[in-house]
Image (cartoon, rainbow, N blue to C red; front, side, top):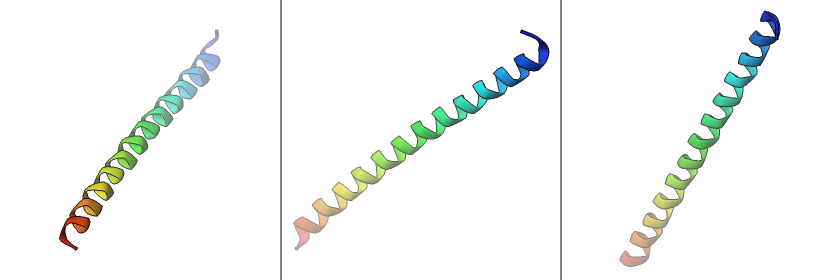
Length: 48
């Protein structure tokens, strides 16, 4: 593997890592929203 190939290789690996992080962040965010929605509906259901 020459230097140029290595640079492209590490660049794609970095991009993959960023995508992975974004996916994890998105998943935890949507999970958080789901929990908040459940809590809100539980509170609203209790009061009415």
